Length: 552
Image 1 (cartoon, rainbow, N blue to C red):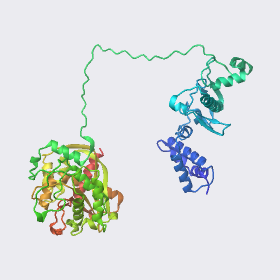
Image 2: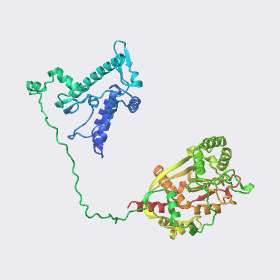
Image 3: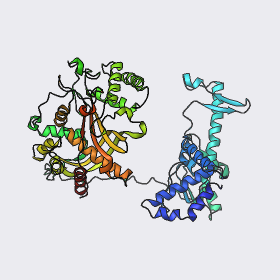
Image 4: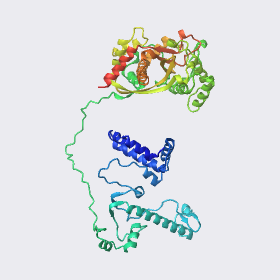
């Protein structure tokens, strides 16, 4: 196989340059590709190499040390051949040529090293460090002066080498500045002129007028002093704004929409008769220190754990990382709970938490999947924390609810909530982008469902029946969250599986209230799980509303 040069030649023959230049920003792209190719060619020493070797050389370029000469070599090059002035250091100019070169600062004092003085000692065959400088700074001691003398000689040699580079970059014209009589510090240009013409540049110019021109500057150019335009402040007025800003436009999440719903309306107007909610991930919650008293036959291990938003986040993180179908899932959960609780200010026994989550995984999902539990779902059939970002139209929660009501059946568990929103009891304008993260997408026998974990605590005597969960969902606006998640997932599915019909493979959305999920209850009367299975026409109507309105 040929080297990088052969690869670039093949790409040019294939017309990649024309394709790159046909794109917006093509000159920038082409310049970068050619630069990277040149660096790889140098890195591989122009030899034949395999794709693996070329990739290794590219990785070496990424990890290369950031010394001065190397970092300048890796700087991006100009992407055009227009008339421009390029300003660069002498180090970066090594190996390059330019039609005209100007060196305005070679006459000045070159700064030496600001670190620990050191120098090569030819006689001793090693390098001598001035450790006295660390403790006391300058000194006239013989050993110290010896290091200084050798270090100055090294610096002078390096400056002469840099001077050579600077003076040999020009193809047609070189312009130098020098200041006669300037005698401080290291002066490589002055030393060179002193050796070549005893410092008499005028005489040298008269001897070779065809090659050297001397221009004497007797006075400094006048400094330009910008003059501010005078402002007539005799009649200052207060600026007033007469524009109308599109306030609803922003990046929305369900939490932000729900917060706006709460600010826009009194929850009591939704006619929801439930006890106050405590904790949960999607709502701000106060920590409850005392456990809720429940009947012993209806208590799950998670039921009595104090609730808070931090507890909800903890449960989500554990469920995201555990393997549901592991033979040692209880032990795995215990390890995860102990690890997470080390960094969480939550009063919770990790063994009780692990036992509760293990019990929750064994509970039947009910709905379209009957006795199936999360414990039967393997990692290859689940996707955790599916993030999405969707455009939102300039619309309102009322408009979305109207679309739901017009396409929902009368026995839909959340129809009454959407009906009240559609009637204008809650009117929140929204526009911009919708972001969110679906807790779980799972596949069972070829069908998909999405799930959201909830750590909400209900009233003292609640046993997480379907009726109680409907009230809890309505109280916190979760039907809107479920709707948005279904729209987002159907769009995701159409992109990943365009041949699949969402109506055939999407079973719905399940809200898993983990405190109430109990495997002792049959699938026909499952606890802690509530399903919503709106029709495909309903989801398509909302999706179409977003697409049509959002495109204007």
